[in-house]
Image (cartoon, rainbow, N blue to C red; front, top):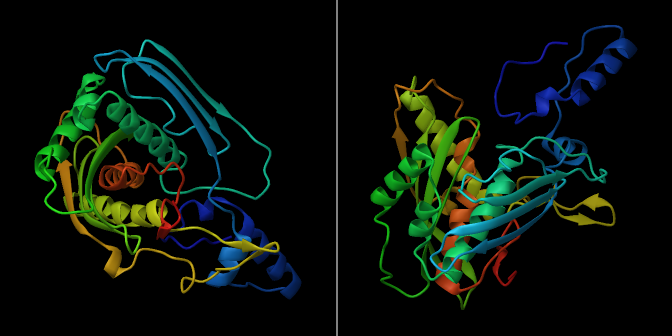
Length: 315
């Protein structure tokens, strides 16, 4: 089997689907064959990002200190499941669930889902404590590397910001995975009349130890931020009578030029720390930052992904 040395498979080359098909065809034909799936075939027969249910329970003291944390992930995976926040009483579990649909890799694996659940919940706790979302996180963080990316993102974003127009909202989220750290700030504009949700600006600070290739790293960070827009807002497979309704990019909604906001990627270079990979972690805080900004603009809390496939009408 000869697998082309190209990127963008997002784990797809790790499975044997295309390899088995090529082997069977080559054996039947008695000669070498080349197998290339069409986009429709890939949509229809490849695996899906794992669905999941995540349950979070927590407690805070009157001063905003976390006192209890219980986190259960059902099916979507254990990557990034541990909380980075300081809390004395905690219980975190991953629960495997029998497969209904074949599932496999997504950028960031389950860390994307686990960070969405955790950072959305942290924002709700900050609201309950009547604390600024950044101050609340800082109060419960001792990890200096995570604090550093939060401070860098907030400084460049201008956090905290005052609203200057109706429908404006700001959100923040952070996390770490695979030895790298990320913090994202988002600005959204929401038109309640039309239901349109527009991401206006994203600022992300990222640190993965010593930087070897600044241009390559920046491309990874910005690319992850753009891809994260789709999973956050509208990407979803639609089913009807056991069939996929949207097996083409014409009908499967991905971020387009009109969806891309003003983007700023801030790279923190830590020459004192060994380099880590940067292909996955930059996507993790995009969805919760956007969701928290939507809440700030509307008072509506979205706990499901994608959050607004049909605008606010899906609320």
